[in-house]
Each structure stands twice: as structure tokens, then as C-alpha cells.
Amino acid sequence: QVQLVESGGGLVQAGGSLRLSCAASGRTISNYAMGWLRQAPGKEREFVAGISWSSGTTYYAGSVKGRFTISRDAAKNTVYLQMSSMKPEDTAVYYCATGATIAGPYDNWGQGTQVTVSS
Image (cartoon, rainbow, N blue to C red; front, side, top):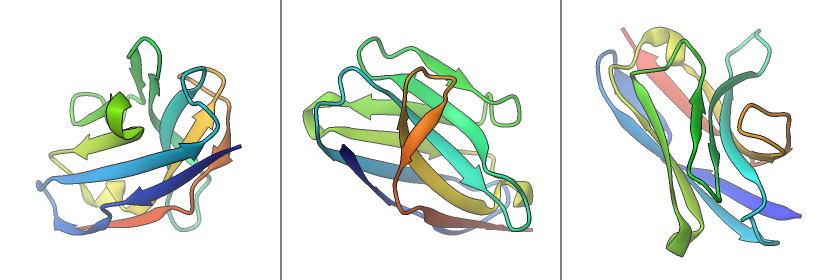
């Protein structure tokens, strides 16, 4: 099992930027896809972005494409989500997860980090 710990959440104004980090430990993650998903109050958890740990191939939800960037640092076993041009509708708890492919399914989650975008 891979352990995942997210950090970097907080409060940001609309139009601003924030970077989330996800530190992975435990089993080797080279065979996994890493992803970010989010869950807003009263809504289902939704996919945001995914990255292949081995190839670096990325995949984004339409709602964040062009605004968010997922990346990884192999030396630090860390995945990042750089969020820019943020909108109030980006407000959610953001989760890091491992999965079979960059588009999912994702089945191993971190504890989540709250992101709030004020208008």
C-alpha cells in the first residue's frame, strides 16, 4: 500500500494561484498513475488531473484544463498540482490518489486538503 499525504491547501482569492503537494511513501509508485480528485460540499468526488509516474503523460478534466498543471518529482516521490486562475467553483477538498491509469479508477486516497476560493 502506498501512503499519501497532501499539503498546500488554503484560502485564495478568485484569479489567484495555489500549489498542492502529495508526498508518497511505502510501496514503489513507479507502476502507478497518480491523480488529484476533489469533492465539493454536497457533490460527488470528481477527477481533476492524472499523471503517469513512469512516462509523465498527463490528463485533465475539461473544467481545469489550461488552468491547472500536474507534475511529479521522482527524487522526492512527490506529485504537485499547480492551480492558477482559480474560481470559486474550484472550492473543494482535494485528494491525492493512486490508480491503474491516469484516467482512473483511483482507489487509494490521502486524507485530503481543503481549498477555498473566495469571490
